[in-house]
Image (cartoon, rainbow, N blue to C red; front, side, top):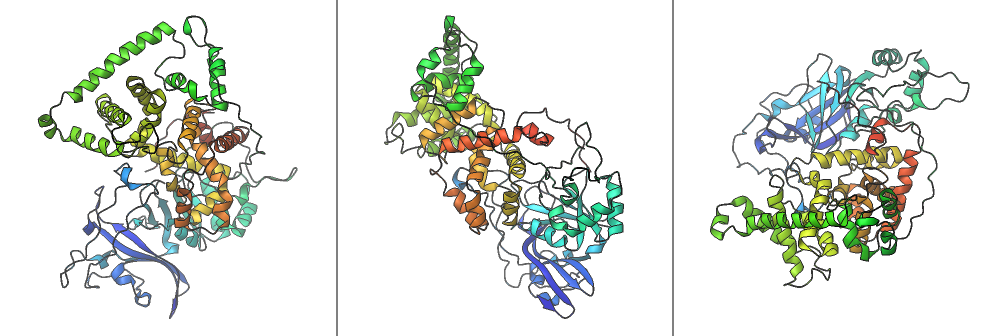
Length: 605
């Protein structure tokens, strides 16, 4: 878009200002607007204006607007956030749809001078740009000027932060701060300034002139291969040097990488190994591990066999009690019997707590009444095509209901959240005993209860770790997803929430879960399972020209079409490929259990 003396090189709608500090914004505190990058009079300007002032680009004023402009406070209807999972059982808290804006009464006076929020700033006046943490909520950018002031945070309700940063990279050099990977320091395209910048950041001990020239040749690929917590920093400068060539880099440090900064773009993974899965563990093989007094022997070897081949169906009812921590691997047969008697008594005491509540009492207990209603609704539609749960008067449905209500008594703080019935159903199907199934379900919930917490911090952290693994395994796929506004991997939310329960046929879910429960070959294998699925669909995603909607649609259409054995084989291949890399970043090692977590450091102000 061009006009007299100016040219609009970038434009993005759905960019809001949140003018209230409240966690949940009301409609009056949200100002919808348009962000533009404009070339004008040998300068490049970043301009934001409310929607009622942004419709005609020829009327753009490259200075702060006065409050008299505009007769209406009408704004765009705020879109509902779609994280890529079914809303009828979503964990509702931070991903709840925000209230929709209503149109004001015709002729009404505006409730706020929205025009006063408009701003325009020369790119040369910018000092730094801070990105929000990657997660499930809207991304935002905070711009800081050379004078030290901050412009209003720009919230991108429809995505677009990466696209804006790519455009800015044509005019500026954006360098990730070594103290804060979300903070980008802004420098002009000037070799002298850039050399001083390298010196300021203390990235190179020697002369930076060669580094600068290589950096200027390809600023985009050098700076913007990742926009998450993982910073792909100065790719050109960090390319491996031929043998005998002088290196611009200092010797690698012996200690851990500098806090808040991790270079992963130069990680070169070796060839993928060949992996063959074994046959399932049979009852006869299990019996060989049972020693005197019923105590299991050579447990690590037995777990390795379960990991590599799973369990035969007839063995699951017994083996799952060990995998889920209900029975101890070290206990004798008599100790197991005593433990079961104790846990049976404990279960029925908790069950009696809600069974003894009269209808009159329940009317005054909104929490229990809410749990009961939610459980009844979820149970009525959980795995109804499975013969174990089909039919209107199926006793299996009653057991699902009773176990889930009793879990509310067991874990008051968490209670019941939609999706838990999906986790209990296969366990009850296999165990076929109310008490044993309850305690096995509790063991499973110990592994995944963070998925159902209202804050969703655990789910955000898992998506961040998944993105980090995928970035190391396949940076090109990550770049493609970034370019299609799908880099947050929100379409994987359901996979991680209920451990792929709805992605595979029911028998395959049993095999997948028992393999994951072994804890082998290390923690977070479920994240590598997600990586394996994306790796298997890589060519389809990248070569089909899919946009964000098509990517989400394609991922959802994979349901019941995946082979669990192929996925598990691929996940193990990816794990071996990663662990064989001698230069694996420390935070990736933490995810795979190869290194202890780094000591926490104080966040940057």
